Length: 437
Ligand SMILES: *Cc1c(COP(=O)(O)O)cnc(C)c1O
Image (cartoon, rainbow, N blue to C red):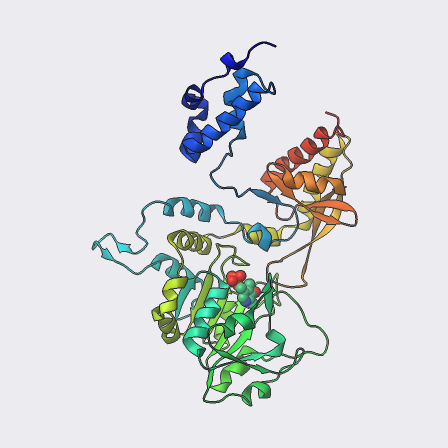
């Protein structure tokens, strides 16, 4: 056996190689050194040629300093909590890049003094919801509820319908979150029916707020009744409405989904919502409404612990100012266009003898919005054993396994990414020797 050892580049020589310079800057010298040592060992073991050490080390290093992987969402679920809910609009992505450096988040360049934090974002938010007298943004929807319950109902009662005792996911229940603040929940009505008189009969001097929570992830059908905000607002107690989804105005595509403007107009003192659901922005909790109450919330010590950072402020402001978010685009995706894209993709794949077919596919809003509503669209249908290798590829393509097939629903895939989906499927088939070029 030839002694390859003398041909293996020394660690310091490999580290100085320009092909590793970018990785060094991104990941630090220790991570690159470890990759070089791994490649050197492979060369010693005869797995790779000595000349390949630097290239193999470079290829083994991650292309980003985060372990998060980009995913092509082919599930048809627009707001997928496990996939990070709303993807940011290009304008919001740019704003995040800008905000990464020093910015005037709380500084007035004219006077050189402190200025109101996030004022540009608040202006944009209030411009979108003119009926709100003031607004505040915290870390997420749950934080908005915690702040409201603590500031307005600690040691007091929150009146809540039994039909609105919601678990939001991963075992988290809103009633538990509310009582953790030291507020007591006064349950009224039944699972399916609650009337105004149920609320009216329990209002007392100890009532902090009436809370109306939109059941955003389930639907009760049949013999049901709930009390509208305009009726609750007659009871002389602040009404807080948790709409969940973050719709700021009525959306005709989702007629059953409540929005901040409507509930405030109907007399809610405060509306809370998430930033990363139907609003299509970053994770955030919006609080909109009565000036005096928002002031109380802003001055509460807890507000400081729940406040958002400059990155969120930038992304949220840009989301509010941009005309269309990727979430809007996915919701509105035209079924005929989806069909044409799915057919084109399937036919390109069958050209390589891959078992692909364009089929109708029902997408959903997901992530706490418009439960039960169906978004008719189209998918490329593949054998189900494509699902796992597609998920683990780069980029990762996550589809939906249904009736023994792997469906790649194109609703949440940008048309510009169809080629990436095609490449990913072809790569899986070629690797298994199932496709021909
Ligand atoms: C999603 C949701 C929440 C929680 O909001 P996060 O932003 O996920 O913390 C609270 N209430 C309702 C009705 C929701 O849909």
